[in-house]
Length: 223
Image 1 (tube, one colour):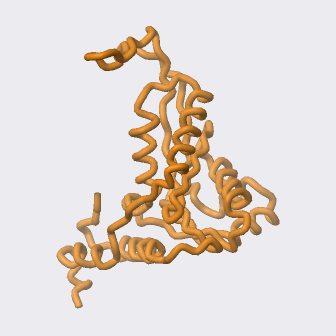
Image 2 (tube, one colour):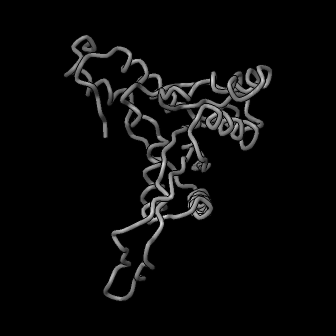
Image 3 (spheres, one colour):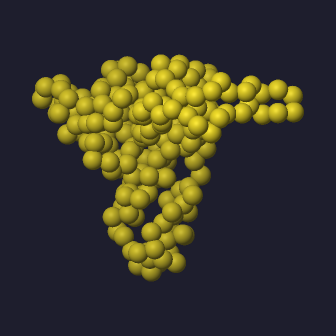
């Protein structure tokens, strides 16, 4: 959904066009474009054994359930490669984000010169988080390998990682999951299946589209 603010916001336009320009770039293994986002899910246990699906009847659950807390999920996707990675964590603190980013830089992208990172403006999504998690020398080394582009405030729909989170929610998280280890197994299987299929995000919203939509709201953008 293309949510454009009705009130004129030059900051929104700047961040939107900046991200869309990144999406126009061709694939470059030395400077891969990676989108990062996060969500959480409740861990919900059963009070009674569900009735399994059978011919003519769907699987049925008791409306009463047990809350077993929540789990955070960090997701990174490389849209042009059809690759994604999900990490399950207990929290979504600065240090958790920093550890996730380091795992990308030292894992799949260890040979990349710089990772072009697209993400929203959550306060933890900052190189400062690297300095909170690691010694200054390591934090600086990691930060120097990032080229960060933030989506606009209230414009996180511009982050392609949200498309992957939507797929994750529909295909993996729609059923009740009681334990974190079960969640980790299901997420790992979903990730493996999506990566094996090389499922790519089909992104169609362009800078030209954005300017057409913005002209009626922002007269200053008229030629």
